[in-house]
Amino acid sequence: DGGITQSPKYLFRKEGQNVTLSCEQNLNHDAMYWYRQDPGQGLRLIYYSQIVNDFQKGDIAEGYSVSREKKESFPLTVTSAQKNPTAFYLCASRVGGSVTEAFFGQGTRLTVV
Amino acid sequence: AQKVTQAQTEISVVEKEDVTLDCVYETRDTTYYLFWYKQPPSGELVFLIRRNSFDEQNEISGRYSWNFQKSTSSFNFTITASQVVDSAVYFCALSETGANNLFFGTGTRLTVIP
Image 1 (cartoon, chains in turn blue, green):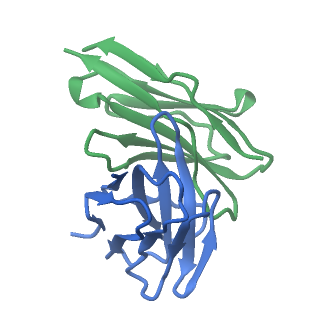
Image 2: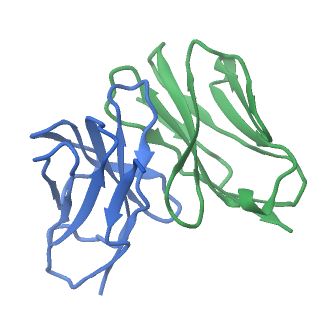
């Protein structure tokens, strides 16, 4: 079935470590997004990519990095520079442009220990 | 600047009651798109509806209905005869023309009590 797969579902990180969250889609969508969700807050955009080998910073990109080497994949790295990384991370994709809805993965819950 | 406000942080209703979730938005664009998503406990956001700014017709889908009023910049969501399975966090979102982002409200947590 077509969809978006995020892994792992739960991730624990020690302070000072970098960790990478995986996002894969088989919907043939051009655009992909990473959002962060904190309790009581809406989803905030970290990075997005409209096409392979191109990506743009969102509202809260500091402490994060991404790559888009393949259309299907958009991994997010949470670096040690991110001071408060504990959150729920959601990956999304859509066909492109503002007229279409985004489809979401099941999320990765990252906890710093 | 675009903004989406969901003033109701949490709502609890008894099963079979009707419930309305409010969404108020701000945008300078004349062409824009509004969305509702449901986030069940599993975490994945489920798309419910998309509405463009030129279509103010209300929409009904089963027990769900949406009321879009440009005059008050509102896009409210009503669940009729609520069920326990409706318990979730519901997000309203806005996308402006040419924008690369969906801008989300802070969500409303709905609890349906059996």
